[in-house]
Amino acid sequence: MASKWEAAEHVPFQFATARQKRAFIRKHALLYIISIPGVLFFLVFKYIPLAGSVIAFQNYNIFRGISGSPWVGLEHFQRMFAYTEFIGILKNTLLIGLYDLLFAFPVPILLALLLNELRVAIFKRIIQTVIYMPHFLSWVIVGGIIVGLLSPTSGFVNHMLKMFGIEPIYFLGEKSYIRSILVGAGVWRDSGWGTIIYLAAIAGINPDLYEAAQIDGASRLRQTFSITVPLILPTITILFLLHIGNFLDFGFERVYVFLNPLNSENGEIIDTYVYRAGLVDRQYSYTTAVGLFKSLVGLALIMIGNALSRRTTGESLY
Image: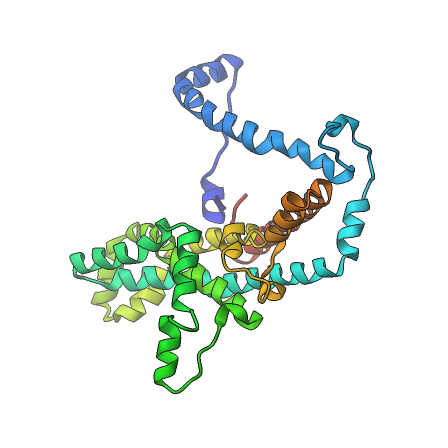
Protein backbone atom coordinates (compact mmCIF):
# COMPACT_ATOMS: atom_id res chain seq x y z
CA MET A 1 0.00 0.00 0.00
CA ALA A 2 1.40 3.38 -0.91
CA SER A 3 0.16 6.88 -0.39
CA LYS A 4 1.44 10.35 -1.02
CA TRP A 5 1.93 10.82 2.73
CA GLU A 6 3.75 7.52 3.21
CA ALA A 7 5.81 8.04 0.06
CA ALA A 8 7.46 11.10 1.57
CA GLU A 9 8.37 9.16 4.70
CA HIS A 10 9.50 6.00 2.92
CA VAL A 11 13.26 5.91 2.45
CA PRO A 12 14.78 2.66 1.13
CA PHE A 13 17.60 1.07 3.09
CA GLN A 14 21.01 2.13 1.85
CA PHE A 15 24.22 0.42 2.86
CA ALA A 16 27.64 2.02 2.53
CA THR A 17 29.44 -1.34 2.44
CA ALA A 18 28.62 -4.97 1.73
CA ARG A 19 29.54 -5.74 5.34
CA GLN A 20 26.76 -3.48 6.59
CA LYS A 21 24.32 -5.21 4.24
CA ARG A 22 25.29 -8.67 5.52
CA ALA A 23 25.00 -7.44 9.10
CA PHE A 24 21.51 -6.15 8.37
CA ILE A 25 20.45 -9.51 6.87
CA ARG A 26 21.90 -11.43 9.83
CA LYS A 27 20.05 -9.13 12.23
CA HIS A 28 16.70 -9.86 10.55
CA ALA A 29 17.48 -13.48 9.64
CA LEU A 30 14.49 -14.80 11.60
CA LEU A 31 12.09 -12.67 9.54
CA TYR A 32 13.55 -14.02 6.30
CA ILE A 33 13.24 -17.60 7.59
CA ILE A 34 9.61 -17.05 8.63
CA SER A 35 8.80 -15.73 5.15
CA ILE A 36 10.11 -18.87 3.38
CA PRO A 37 6.87 -20.97 3.72
CA GLY A 38 4.80 -18.11 2.32
CA VAL A 39 7.18 -17.60 -0.60
CA LEU A 40 7.18 -21.35 -1.34
CA PHE A 41 3.38 -21.44 -1.21
CA PHE A 42 3.08 -18.73 -3.85
CA LEU A 43 5.79 -20.30 -6.00
CA VAL A 44 4.26 -23.79 -5.95
CA PHE A 45 0.55 -22.98 -6.06
CA LYS A 46 0.43 -19.59 -7.81
CA TYR A 47 3.40 -19.06 -10.11
CA ILE A 48 4.43 -22.55 -11.31
CA PRO A 49 0.82 -23.39 -12.44
CA LEU A 50 0.95 -20.27 -14.64
CA ALA A 51 3.20 -22.27 -16.98
CA GLY A 52 0.17 -24.43 -17.79
CA SER A 53 -1.44 -21.44 -19.50
CA VAL A 54 0.52 -22.32 -22.64
CA ILE A 55 -2.11 -24.95 -23.47
CA ALA A 56 -4.32 -22.01 -24.49
CA PHE A 57 -2.12 -21.87 -27.60
CA GLN A 58 -2.23 -25.62 -28.25
CA ASN A 59 -4.72 -28.35 -29.07
CA TYR A 60 -3.91 -29.94 -25.75
CA ASN A 61 -4.06 -33.71 -25.62
CA ILE A 62 -4.10 -35.12 -22.10
CA PHE A 63 -2.12 -38.22 -23.20
CA ARG A 64 0.55 -36.35 -25.21
CA GLY A 65 1.05 -33.63 -22.62
CA ILE A 66 2.24 -30.07 -23.25
CA SER A 67 5.41 -31.12 -25.07
CA GLY A 68 3.58 -33.43 -27.49
CA SER A 69 0.44 -31.38 -28.22
CA PRO A 70 0.33 -29.35 -31.48
CA TRP A 71 0.56 -25.55 -31.36
CA VAL A 72 -2.36 -23.59 -32.88
CA GLY A 73 -1.47 -19.99 -32.06
CA LEU A 74 -4.48 -17.75 -31.31
CA GLU A 75 -7.07 -20.12 -32.78
CA HIS A 76 -8.87 -20.64 -29.44
CA PHE A 77 -9.05 -16.90 -28.77
CA GLN A 78 -10.54 -16.32 -32.25
CA ARG A 79 -13.04 -19.09 -31.62
CA MET A 80 -13.92 -17.53 -28.26
CA PHE A 81 -14.85 -14.15 -29.77
CA ALA A 82 -16.61 -15.76 -32.75
CA TYR A 83 -18.86 -17.80 -30.45
CA THR A 84 -22.10 -15.81 -30.05
CA GLU A 85 -22.96 -17.42 -26.71
CA PHE A 86 -19.64 -16.23 -25.27
CA ILE A 87 -20.52 -12.57 -25.91
CA GLY A 88 -23.68 -13.04 -23.84
CA ILE A 89 -21.70 -14.76 -21.07
CA LEU A 90 -19.14 -11.93 -21.05
CA LYS A 91 -22.00 -9.42 -20.84
CA ASN A 92 -23.50 -11.30 -17.87
CA THR A 93 -20.11 -11.36 -16.13
CA LEU A 94 -19.55 -7.63 -16.63
CA LEU A 95 -23.10 -6.66 -15.54
CA ILE A 96 -23.13 -8.86 -12.44
CA GLY A 97 -19.66 -7.60 -11.49
CA LEU A 98 -20.80 -4.00 -12.00
CA TYR A 99 -23.95 -4.50 -9.91
CA ASP A 100 -21.86 -6.09 -7.18
CA LEU A 101 -19.48 -3.13 -7.24
CA LEU A 102 -22.29 -0.55 -7.12
CA PHE A 103 -24.59 -2.21 -4.57
CA ALA A 104 -22.54 -4.67 -2.51
CA PHE A 105 -19.32 -2.71 -2.03
CA PRO A 106 -20.84 0.28 -0.12
CA VAL A 107 -22.88 -1.89 2.28
CA PRO A 108 -19.99 -2.88 4.62
CA ILE A 109 -18.97 0.79 4.85
CA LEU A 110 -22.48 1.83 5.86
CA LEU A 111 -22.74 -1.04 8.35
CA ALA A 112 -19.39 -0.10 9.91
CA LEU A 113 -20.43 3.54 10.26
CA LEU A 114 -23.76 2.54 11.84
CA LEU A 115 -22.12 0.03 14.21
CA ASN A 116 -19.64 2.71 15.23
CA GLU A 117 -22.55 4.85 16.43
CA LEU A 118 -23.89 2.17 18.79
CA ARG A 119 -22.93 3.03 22.36
CA VAL A 120 -24.29 -0.04 24.23
CA ALA A 121 -21.38 -2.51 23.95
CA ILE A 122 -23.39 -5.73 24.44
CA PHE A 123 -25.96 -4.68 21.86
CA LYS A 124 -23.16 -3.77 19.43
CA ARG A 125 -21.51 -7.19 19.89
CA ILE A 126 -24.79 -9.03 19.33
CA ILE A 127 -25.42 -7.11 16.10
CA GLN A 128 -21.86 -7.78 14.92
CA THR A 129 -22.19 -11.51 15.61
CA VAL A 130 -25.52 -11.73 13.81
CA ILE A 131 -24.22 -10.04 10.66
CA TYR A 132 -20.91 -11.99 10.71
CA MET A 133 -22.55 -15.43 10.92
CA PRO A 134 -23.76 -15.83 7.30
CA HIS A 135 -20.15 -15.54 6.10
CA PHE A 136 -19.36 -18.93 7.66
CA LEU A 137 -22.06 -20.66 5.63
CA SER A 138 -21.05 -22.34 2.37
CA TRP A 139 -22.67 -21.20 -0.85
CA VAL A 140 -24.51 -24.54 -1.01
CA ILE A 141 -26.25 -23.75 2.29
CA VAL A 142 -26.83 -20.12 1.32
CA GLY A 143 -28.30 -21.32 -1.98
CA GLY A 144 -30.63 -23.70 -0.15
CA ILE A 145 -31.83 -20.94 2.17
CA ILE A 146 -32.44 -18.47 -0.67
CA VAL A 147 -34.20 -21.08 -2.82
CA GLY A 148 -36.42 -21.98 0.14
CA LEU A 149 -37.29 -18.34 0.83
CA LEU A 150 -38.11 -17.67 -2.84
CA SER A 151 -40.08 -20.88 -3.44
CA PRO A 152 -43.34 -20.13 -5.31
CA THR A 153 -45.30 -22.60 -3.15
CA SER A 154 -43.80 -22.50 0.35
CA GLY A 155 -41.39 -19.56 0.30
CA PHE A 156 -41.68 -16.75 2.83
CA VAL A 157 -41.41 -14.04 0.15
CA ASN A 158 -44.35 -15.38 -1.85
CA HIS A 159 -46.42 -15.75 1.34
CA MET A 160 -45.82 -12.05 1.96
CA LEU A 161 -46.78 -11.23 -1.65
CA LYS A 162 -50.02 -13.20 -1.22
CA MET A 163 -50.92 -11.07 1.80
CA PHE A 164 -50.87 -8.04 -0.51
CA GLY A 165 -52.89 -9.80 -3.22
CA ILE A 166 -49.92 -10.40 -5.53
CA GLU A 167 -49.67 -13.68 -7.42
CA PRO A 168 -46.72 -15.94 -6.46
CA ILE A 169 -43.59 -15.45 -8.52
CA TYR A 170 -41.14 -18.20 -9.47
CA PHE A 171 -38.09 -15.96 -8.96
CA LEU A 172 -35.47 -18.53 -9.93
CA GLY A 173 -37.49 -19.53 -12.98
CA GLU A 174 -37.41 -16.07 -14.56
CA LYS A 175 -34.16 -14.80 -16.01
CA SER A 176 -34.90 -11.16 -15.12
CA TYR A 177 -34.46 -11.84 -11.36
CA ILE A 178 -31.28 -13.92 -11.34
CA ARG A 179 -28.77 -11.03 -11.28
CA SER A 180 -30.57 -9.34 -8.38
CA ILE A 181 -30.69 -12.64 -6.49
CA LEU A 182 -26.95 -13.25 -7.01
CA VAL A 183 -25.96 -9.79 -5.81
CA GLY A 184 -28.48 -9.81 -2.95
CA ALA A 185 -27.29 -13.21 -1.71
CA GLY A 186 -23.72 -11.93 -1.68
CA VAL A 187 -24.72 -8.83 0.28
CA TRP A 188 -26.48 -10.94 2.91
CA ARG A 189 -23.61 -13.43 3.24
CA ASP A 190 -20.50 -11.21 3.18
CA SER A 191 -21.43 -7.65 4.12
CA GLY A 192 -21.08 -8.26 7.85
CA TRP A 193 -17.69 -9.87 7.40
CA GLY A 194 -16.58 -6.97 5.22
CA THR A 195 -17.20 -4.52 8.07
CA ILE A 196 -14.26 -5.92 10.08
CA ILE A 197 -11.59 -3.97 8.20
CA TYR A 198 -13.60 -0.74 8.26
CA LEU A 199 -14.30 -1.07 11.99
CA ALA A 200 -10.56 -1.62 12.55
CA ALA A 201 -9.82 1.52 10.54
CA ILE A 202 -12.39 3.50 12.54
CA ALA A 203 -10.93 2.20 15.82
CA GLY A 204 -7.56 3.67 14.82
CA ILE A 205 -8.92 7.23 14.61
CA ASN A 206 -7.62 9.53 17.35
CA PRO A 207 -10.49 10.13 19.87
CA ASP A 208 -9.19 13.68 20.46
CA LEU A 209 -10.56 14.62 17.04
CA TYR A 210 -14.09 13.69 18.12
CA GLU A 211 -13.71 15.53 21.45
CA ALA A 212 -12.52 18.66 19.64
CA ALA A 213 -15.48 18.39 17.25
CA GLN A 214 -17.92 18.03 20.17
CA ILE A 215 -16.49 21.14 21.79
CA ASP A 216 -17.07 22.97 18.51
CA GLY A 217 -20.70 21.78 18.58
CA ALA A 218 -20.51 19.25 15.74
CA SER A 219 -23.35 16.72 15.68
CA ARG A 220 -22.75 12.95 15.38
CA LEU A 221 -23.66 13.09 11.70
CA ARG A 222 -21.27 15.98 11.14
CA GLN A 223 -18.48 14.11 12.94
CA THR A 224 -19.10 11.08 10.75
CA PHE A 225 -18.80 13.00 7.47
CA SER A 226 -16.02 15.37 8.60
CA ILE A 227 -13.82 12.98 10.61
CA THR A 228 -14.69 9.29 10.22
CA VAL A 229 -15.26 9.10 6.47
CA PRO A 230 -12.20 11.17 5.42
CA LEU A 231 -9.90 9.21 7.74
CA ILE A 232 -11.05 5.78 6.51
CA LEU A 233 -10.98 6.93 2.88
CA PRO A 234 -7.50 5.38 2.23
CA THR A 235 -8.85 2.02 3.45
CA ILE A 236 -11.94 2.38 1.26
CA THR A 237 -9.76 3.22 -1.75
CA ILE A 238 -7.47 0.23 -1.31
CA LEU A 239 -10.38 -2.20 -0.85
CA PHE A 240 -12.11 -0.66 -3.85
CA LEU A 241 -9.02 -1.29 -5.99
CA LEU A 242 -8.84 -4.88 -4.76
CA HIS A 243 -12.52 -5.29 -5.59
CA ILE A 244 -11.87 -4.01 -9.12
CA GLY A 245 -9.09 -6.60 -9.47
CA ASN A 246 -11.68 -9.31 -8.81
CA PHE A 247 -14.27 -7.64 -11.03
CA LEU A 248 -14.62 -10.62 -13.38
CA ASP A 249 -13.90 -13.17 -10.66
CA PHE A 250 -17.42 -13.26 -9.25
CA GLY A 251 -17.15 -16.80 -7.95
CA PHE A 252 -18.15 -20.14 -9.44
CA GLU A 253 -20.00 -21.55 -6.42
CA ARG A 254 -21.92 -18.37 -5.81
CA VAL A 255 -23.52 -18.52 -9.26
CA TYR A 256 -23.64 -22.25 -9.91
CA VAL A 257 -25.97 -23.02 -6.99
CA PHE A 258 -28.63 -20.67 -8.40
CA LEU A 259 -28.36 -21.56 -12.10
CA ASN A 260 -30.97 -23.58 -13.94
CA PRO A 261 -31.96 -23.82 -17.63
CA LEU A 262 -34.64 -21.12 -17.14
CA ASN A 263 -32.32 -18.40 -15.84
CA SER A 264 -28.92 -19.31 -17.31
CA GLU A 265 -29.31 -16.86 -20.21
CA ASN A 266 -28.89 -13.95 -17.76
CA GLY A 267 -27.01 -15.79 -15.03
CA GLU A 268 -24.21 -17.77 -16.61
CA ILE A 269 -20.79 -16.16 -16.17
CA ILE A 270 -17.29 -16.99 -17.40
CA ASP A 271 -16.48 -19.21 -14.39
CA THR A 272 -19.54 -21.43 -14.84
CA TYR A 273 -18.97 -21.53 -18.61
CA VAL A 274 -15.35 -22.63 -18.08
CA TYR A 275 -16.59 -25.40 -15.79
CA ARG A 276 -19.20 -26.55 -18.30
CA ALA A 277 -17.00 -26.36 -21.42
CA GLY A 278 -13.70 -27.28 -19.77
CA LEU A 279 -14.38 -29.99 -17.23
CA VAL A 280 -17.69 -31.38 -18.47
CA ASP A 281 -17.00 -31.15 -22.24
CA ARG A 282 -13.19 -31.57 -21.84
CA GLN A 283 -12.24 -28.56 -23.98
CA TYR A 284 -9.13 -27.82 -21.93
CA SER A 285 -7.28 -25.54 -24.35
CA TYR A 286 -10.33 -23.49 -25.25
CA THR A 287 -11.39 -22.88 -21.65
CA THR A 288 -7.80 -22.06 -20.69
CA ALA A 289 -7.90 -19.36 -23.37
CA VAL A 290 -11.16 -18.06 -21.83
CA GLY A 291 -9.64 -18.05 -18.34
CA LEU A 292 -6.49 -16.34 -19.61
CA PHE A 293 -8.60 -13.66 -21.26
CA LYS A 294 -10.47 -13.10 -17.99
CA SER A 295 -7.22 -12.77 -16.05
CA LEU A 296 -5.79 -10.26 -18.52
CA VAL A 297 -8.95 -8.13 -18.37
CA GLY A 298 -8.80 -8.22 -14.55
CA LEU A 299 -5.13 -7.17 -14.63
CA ALA A 300 -5.91 -4.30 -17.01
CA LEU A 301 -8.80 -3.12 -14.82
CA ILE A 302 -6.73 -3.07 -11.65
CA MET A 303 -3.88 -1.21 -13.39
CA ILE A 304 -6.28 1.40 -14.77
CA GLY A 305 -8.05 1.75 -11.41
CA ASN A 306 -4.74 2.00 -9.59
CA ALA A 307 -3.50 4.75 -11.94
CA LEU A 308 -6.77 6.71 -11.64
CA SER A 309 -6.75 6.38 -7.86
CA ARG A 310 -3.14 7.56 -7.60
CA ARG A 311 -3.93 10.57 -9.75
CA THR A 312 -7.20 11.56 -8.03
CA THR A 313 -6.74 10.57 -4.36
CA GLY A 314 -3.01 9.92 -3.98
CA GLU A 315 -3.74 6.35 -2.78
CA SER A 316 -2.62 3.30 -4.74
CA LEU A 317 -1.72 -0.36 -4.35
CA TYR A 318 1.80 0.09 -5.73
